[in-house]
Image (cartoon, rainbow, N blue to C red):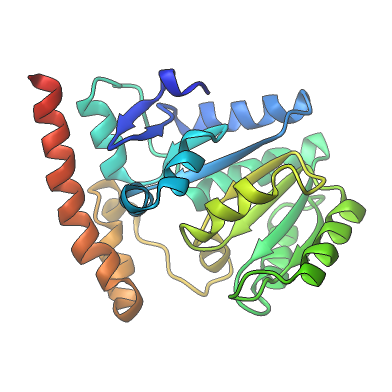
Length: 252
């Protein structure tokens, strides 16, 4: 999607799409054998882009940068994009996996802690009989060595996946996709963050009503305050302040 047709939220071009439209776009790319990566972005990704120019470029160079968080959806609507809807990473993964069975597309799972990608493979195979999980890889927390890069390249070449799921945290997954989309033998890369942990039960998803009112961040904070307090208690107020200034500037 061209940057000119996106919603500018603090410089990040958010695709003004819905879940159904995003899924349709992904399968259209697959049918045409196009190569793209998809960023699934909320407030955290937008705020990280304020201090990481490369991440900002990665978001804006993607095939899609979809609104993962309700505040991003609200922001898009305030800027006049009434049709924008939330594209929640874990839900996007399930939608795409379900439809891929009929079309015979192949998947590769990259990310998670030790054993999580194998658990996710079993979970998806149980949930969607006939799904083709062609390979899995659990990366170290550090950057890949040259030998590990070669190993991954060979694994992906043998698996020949159409869809490459990246389950790392932001901004790691975005940097990985931008660096590897043209190195690895796959068509579509999708950075879905916590989806690996949510679908394997290592993280608890929020109830629908909490998601609807835009408080999923608080639900996640309560589960892991030590790791997430800075992300939410500093980034969220700062986002509100900066976005309010953007709205005022636009009105002027």
